Amino acid sequence: MKKNNLHTLISFIENEEVRKKLLLSEDRIKRSFDTLFMGYNLKAEDVLNDVVHVNNYTGIVEVKNINFYSYCEHHFAPFFGTANVYYQPNEIITGLGKIVRLVKDVHARRLQIQELMTKDIANDMMRVLNCKGVFVETTAKHTCICSRGPSDDTSETTITYGLGTLEHWYLKK
Image (cartoon, rainbow, N blue to C red):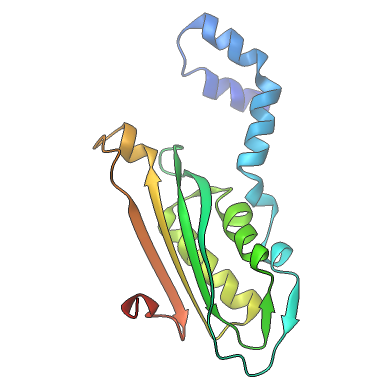
């Protein structure tokens, strides 16, 4: 993050004493942002890279309850929740931890909209692993809903997206 961009962010705080303290934390803030938004430096191919070839696989692989933390690109406010990823392999499978990293490290660690994050996870699984089908479900709590606007800290948002043989997986659940 460029120094002047951080100063712009800090300028929203009108208390001069607080601003001076934040400027002393500049390196810590930069390191934090480097971690929070490291997904821009990763691609699906970077994490879905350990594959095993299979023949005639007809089952469905489920990786559920993947915790993620992200930032809303509309409000620059955090949202967090869980993702469930289901896929039906074609000729290759990947390590289960690789799917977790796709959700947490590649997609959630970017400025996001939950609907697009869910869709992009499914598209990457389909494209990189050449799956027969993929279904992704995310459920999240948005702090922009909790702390501003409706000020409702009990609501959760669930988004689903399916492709191929699992396009309508939610109808079977």
